[in-house]
Picture 1: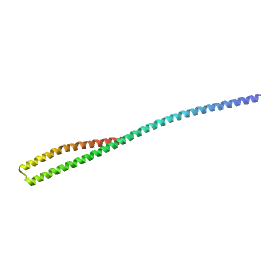
Picture 2: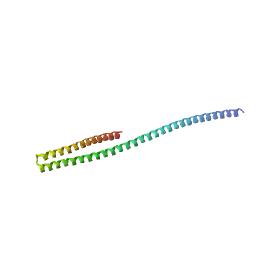
Picture 3: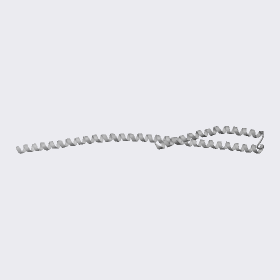
Picture 4: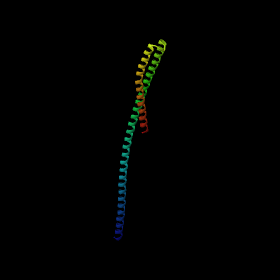
Amino acid sequence: VAVLQAQVEEAQQQVQTVLSQQTALADQCTAAEVQRANMQSRLEEGQEELQNTSLEYDASCSEKDSIISEQRALQSRVAGLCAERDGLMAEVATLKEALHLRDGPLGAQTLAADDRRRLVAAERDPLQDQVAVLQAQVEEAQQQVQTVLSQ
């Protein structure tokens, strides 16, 4: 009986040891599950931040493309105005030459040609002002592009 009682006590100790080990393993599992949940949460936060950054990047690219398109349109308009100005200046030169050939350097008709030249110059000056404004807009657009590109 004493031997059996000793074996029972030893078995109970082994059961207690196994239960303690089982409790420790359960605690480790719980800690691992908490750590996994924390990591999952951090991963989801990182994915959300990545998505927001991606959306911001896409918006910046779209804005840059829009600015570049606007810059090209302005450059085309400036080129057109410059060509128009050059045409007007050529017309003035042609008119001066025609008047010079027809009337000589002196006379009342030369005064009329000077009046025409002043009229053409008066038309040219606002066009030159327009060109200057457009060039300033182009420079501003280029600065905006540089700002967007540097971001």
